[in-house]
Amino acid sequence: MSKKIINASNAPAPIGPYNQAVEVNGMLFISGQIALIPGTDELQLSSIEAETTQVMENLKAILTEAQLDFSNVIKTSIFLSDMNLFATVNTLYAAYFSSDFPARETVAVLGLPKGVHVEISMIAAR
Image (tube, rainbow, N blue to C red):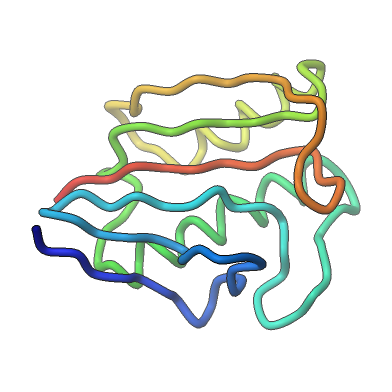
């Protein structure tokens, strides 16, 4: 097994015992990203639109560090604090893909880290 740790300097540092992403045999597993602003301990929570955009930009930075992009994403998991946020998050999420959307599930959960409203994880392939 070939295992490579991916940590992008322009994405938030992990807040626990995990890495931003791990690549194994051409598959990239990206940890759930929240709206942490890279290089700070601050969250972008001014609106659900701003929060979702920050999450997607954090994911983009990790994909870029791994020399991949959203066209390589094959699976996503979206966690929401409230399913009423679905339409807004879905619209912003979709804008990062051009075609051939990845497989996905979206679920509402009781709570997310640091009280955020959205967390997204991804799996990408070379």
